[in-house]
Image 1 (cartoon, rainbow over the protein chains, first blue to last red):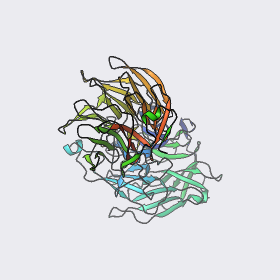
Image 2: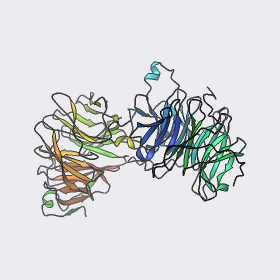
Image 3: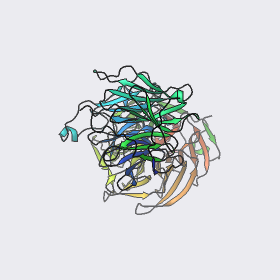
Image 4: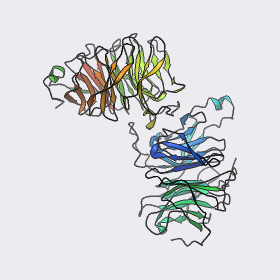
Length: 321
Length: 292
């Protein structure tokens, strides 16, 4: 088990109380509100911290799990049941991006992020929901981090941008070749490092936080294991980074050794904080609020939490352009 | 045994030596069979394969239309135009005999309609279709159209041939899959494939529908009716047969799970079954209701 120095508690507050069987996932701050998903009800919800109000953002979400906003304000989601990444357009429409990797359908997308170049990185897992539908598409054969990039970025406001055809114009690429159960992912503020959590079934499955360098040719270098959660008998899920480059990890115990928590891990792998979360099964964490200094945590219990005393803040609009 | 009789009347419809013959295979997911009486061909869709296929006995199959917009149910109107439940194209469309395509309905109440599943044309030209919500839920069924479902419940819709207006005629048909008229068009049968029941609706003179009346249970996804008013539905061993009162009188075994049915051949005494990755042909004693 990791030895962690005692730190002041973050003072988690309950935004929404736990609700049995209605796990929350997919946190994304859109600059004003927090978007989060409730896959069991096929809903995406919107929390307005100013009014302390939660409203329905989308129904019929096709088990959307992960959510992420790009710098252009676009909201993307991981429609895990239908094995596709979609763009939730401001006019209420939903359009899918390329879902074929070398002629084969990818698996169930889980968490996703949008980098400074507008590329969408996502973890692609084979789960019990992966029926594949009547088309009977077989599993991909691997569970990897995949990346969608526009074949040719249209200039905003141009005819090409307005007539952009969803489902095409995106190139899907496999980025990791050593993962078996990728869950969360985050980019360092300088976007030079990709962090990936892996959580295979205990005890044999990998339970790791890994760091991959982004190489100049656009590929990922070999992974370094920053933390092995098998030593805590716990599984990591969603990730976030703060503006100093520390990685925040949503962690659930598999045994009795630790409490549900958010770990703060330095780029060199030191566990610098371990903050207990007062709800079971944290699935995702994300900074929000006007100064990006409020940490939101979604949980499997259905509780949505916020903490204003982390002493940390999200990286904001830095990184590559 | 290819068929099982639960009532002596079943043998008037389905001979004891009935043969279930596979006429096409290797598809991703077959649906929407319809007999094209003008060319003597069977059409069907492979939804995920994005194709409308054509089969002519003794000749074989060929691509009729690709891409198909992930089309689902097909039928013909009296003018010989192919009328299509566009599924994830999110519209009802029509292909004229010269090949030109027209979108008939894309919006209702200002938003995109659901995912049109199956479709029939009444003799007065009114088009009825099941406007479901499930089309966008499956990998491989999507198109580049808007995939957002705006109306949560599935409904049956009707396009009025005179006004060109589309309206919801019932929201009491559950998940809304296959649909078929009785011989005199006084009843519309609609499959609820989630609850696995068929509901019957009285068709009023103005084309509206009465309340749902439970017709049959433990049924599959789609229905067609013969000239005697017997209801053939996918389900059970492959195809189930109900008499006009809703009593199960027998079944026909099909090697794959049936998705939809069509009457065909020149005498309308053949039942075609789309099932899984294949299409099957079954010669019967009874005669189906003609299409087109």
